[in-house]
Amino acid sequence: MTSAAEPETLTPGLYIAATPIGNLGDITLRGLAVLTRCDAIACEDTRVTGKLLKLLGISNRMIRYDDHASDADRQRLIAAMQHQAIALVSDAGMPLVSDPGFRLVREARAAGITVTALPGASAPLLALALSGLPSDRFLFAGFLPPNEQARAAVLAELANVRATLIFFETAPRLVKALTQIAQVLPGREVAVARELTKMHEECRSGSAEELLAHYQTHPPRGEIVLLIGPPGERDLGEVDADALLLAAMEHDKPSQAAGQVAKVTGLDRRTLYARAMELRIK
View (tube, rainbow, N blue to C red):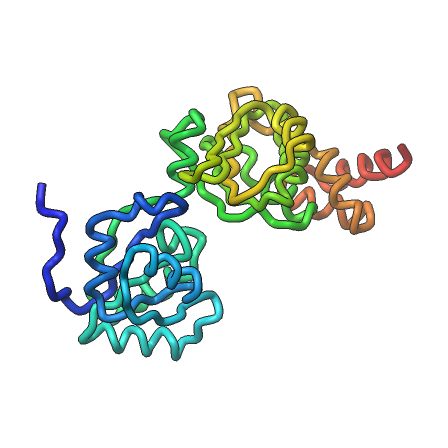
């Protein structure tokens, strides 16, 4: 095992540095060394990162780099990496996880820049470990869409994936997401991991219906990771077409809804259209 210490002077290049997702004690020794000794820190929000650096006792130059960064912004950073050590951080956790940093890393590598990744806190992995759901195969799919129809389509698309599904979700949308999971993926085990590493950390598991009943009477707060267990043998192919049709018909005509559901499920469009007409009459 090598020493955690970094050299006093960092080699020019890009350093991908994980930051705490809640508990300040989760910063690593290497992370502290790099954030202290690098020439500049590229971050999503200078206010968020500035607060973290202040708590860690670090005073260093920050450069904003987020979803709105232009090609010119990236090229300026890459040019700086030729002779400076630039750290890349996200607002919390591991950069590039549901984060725009992959473009910078890809272009830096293409330019021959040395890229170093420092391990650290990651909310999806921590939630997976806490949930007790199968962890031999998992799929992280970012945020579920806020739109009901789009959310149903994503759940249907991933219904037969033999892996634990991991999503980010917001507290105001959790109840709607659980309602749709109960409709589209009935019988699956679900877990809600909330406020990870913080004082009010919680990981609650059960069926979507059980969790829905709890959070309807106990409105959640904080940042949430939502996990859905993999399908059992009898679950494969049992996508709830009725739920998808009903969700689609809230915004579109039966014919359009049938086409959308056919696209995401592979079911026959004419059969779905006939069923949509039956559901509309009820």
